[in-house]
Length: 352
Image (cartoon, rainbow, N blue to C red):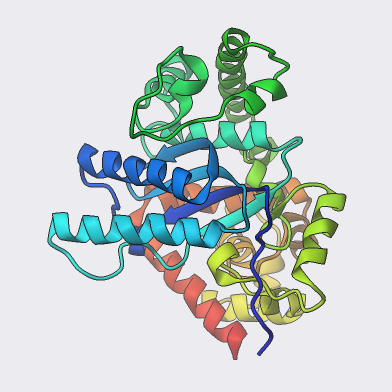
């Protein structure tokens, strides 16, 4: 077996996500959220990690961090293990709290730090019950959400001892701001503009919406890299010729990328109990076809461009299909459970 490698190096910038086991809640009270933030602050000091953005949702959390040393795994192991021990004791439970290893995407700062921070801060209005609300209500929800770093970006708030330190300057700089006051003004304008554009897209016919434009993570390559060609090549050199990625970092294995399109589609068709030709056939409201594209993305580690080629559609159309499945997954727990079972079944087939 090839040696596993981690995408870790001094100064690396990451978007990190950790989810609850079987999509269960990881936060049951404000005390839970406050404790994780306290651990995050301790971890910042202990591992010399710089924090640019965070959001705590009910079943998962997001971080945007830079590691001064090649130690993301150590930092995340400390954070999730310490929180799991505390949470289990407090809530009278045992076992795993998080769904396997965290997922981290290493990213290029230029062109991505600003958009990924926006994506993180938009999470409170990307959940069921908030997507279709009026824009002003959504904006207020984002601005006032108490369990994200957004207030550090849009309000003149004092640092609180024992809480994480948020570094806003580089994100503000991406908006052309040279002072904190200007940065706060520009970031408020940026978030409003994000929601206005998103609403404009929602008003278009479904087949013509460019929802992928509001998810910068849709451009991830190799399962864990967000950036241009030169940055991708830089990470490729770090990984070495075997290109085996660590599950602790990316939640994926390189062997999935080496499976042919035909074999991947056959396995997907088998899991969905459909013929490959049926999944390739273009027609409106093709639910299983959308699910097939989602599984190729989530379990097969294919890019949207590759999925578009597999199903003879444009990259944007593949992004729309995956987004439709994700929306339904987030809104329908029964569907989410069935989808997760299909994802695991597909991985099992691809491993054999």
